Image (cartoon, rainbow, N blue to C red; front, side, top):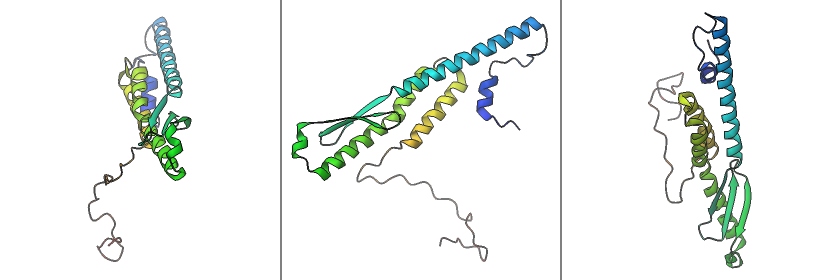
Length: 175
């Protein structure tokens, strides 16, 4: 069984099935083209890494007292306070700062999607789309959307009965 999954498919993409059959010069030319394709892909992924590293996103607190900037890792790289800071109690300032940071972090997956689409997907084929989706999925997992106050989070659908059965009878152990 192939343990490489989609990554293995990306490595073999572009290799003819009969690579080692035929004229040796054709084989060499085919290998050279395959290596050149791998080098192009490596350059695109390095370009993506560089562009993601340069990502900076800003958000302002609900009351406008602070504007923060985070990088693609979610690290706070800048915080700018307005003159309203003098009328804001320390506890409220903390809440406003944290809300602004959370709002900026929520923007990260969408921005990474834009960068990945521009860098990998355009002209990259299905394997590039799959890679971009996996990368964005990582950022969505790392920076999930927060639930607005007063709005209930979406609950996952209930599992059908019968999955958690006690050894002694047919009832669920959670009832």
